Amino acid sequence: MDYQSYFTSALTKLKDEGNYRVFADLERHRGEFPRATCRREDESDVTIWCSNDYLGMGQHPDVLAAMHEALDRCGAGSGGTRNISGTTHDHVLLEAELADLHGKEAALLFTSGYVSNWAALGTLASQIPNCVVLSDALNHASMIEGIRHSRAQKMIWAHNDLADLEAKLASLPLEQPKLVAFESVYSMDGDIAPIKEICDLADRYNAMTYLDEVHAVGLYGPRGGGIAEREGLMDRLTVIEGTLGKAFGVVGGYIAASKELCDFVRSFSSGFIFTTALPPAVAAGAAASIRHLKSSTAEREAHQARVAQVRERLDEIGIPHEPNPSHIIPVMVGDPMKCKYISDILLEQYGIYIQPINFPTVPRGTERLRITPSPVHSQEDVDRLIDALEALWVQCQLARRPMAAQ
Ligand SMILES: *Cc1c(COP(=O)(O)O)cnc(C)c1O
Image (tube, rainbow, N blue to C red):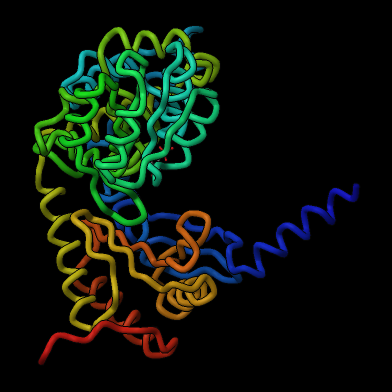
């Protein structure tokens, strides 16, 4: 086999479909985020409108101070797996902070949210004898891979569809172990799962629940515990999973659950055991971010206000965006080439960076620009975004909604 030409032809196919991924080479400016330098043929300043650092915590003074302090105190890396010299006091404190955030007995850290889903779901589903995983159809790739890796029996229920979930639960013997895996805020459509009703079904059919709150932690609930906190449901979930890399602005992932469950995953999960622990400075920064957002609601309030304002401005000029109850604004383009083209022009001519979201991240025909307003976007940033989108919608002859009567 000619390996190189195989790689080239596979990539050419992706390019022809408009689904080839091109990274923007960015350098974020501390204290000025969402501003960044973008390096292409030359350097230019851009405003980022698609970051998952939803609150700008990646540059919060408390977070940076904690990271500097830990770096100066302990040095760069952790030096080992958690079991072999890699557990520092910063890891212990961070796990306590996370358990408290979610009202659980314990928490367990992983190197990313992806790894936490992959490892925790993979371990639970493979180690619990005869376990069936009931997985929402739109679950994140990390959950899907974890479930697949477990080789457990899997049933996929239609997205957020309680009747379908119930039918699948009812088809299984009551005593058979079951795990219902789902998300709170779905990252591409921004819709929110009916958590209470899912927990009710899980109770009725004797199932465990596993909730990915990656796009909600830090952002919802009185202390940033996520949608389950906001709705007073944290105690009803068997496992709450989250990331430290999005609203908390650093990196890492975790689960929060009972002491026994966390100890079980800690003891049996390859993806936890056999990898170097996060650097202490990362753990300290994440803990500072969580601590800040537990007591401060200013960021969450400003975030919601900014999101509402951008939606309103899009409505005023008739640009179609999927309505949803979260902070994610999917502006629908519905064509991979046009989506990429708009994104390119926004970057080149307007200094606005919004990554196109194409297949396989979303289904074909639903290609979109996923806009994530934040408290660190200014009024002027919003004005420039709206003006640019308006001009591009005219230029590309994209469909608009009927505009509100003048
Ligand atoms: C981003 C994401 C993850 C992975 O989290 P990382 O910390 O980025 O690895 C898990 N679940 C969902 C729904 C995500 O969007």
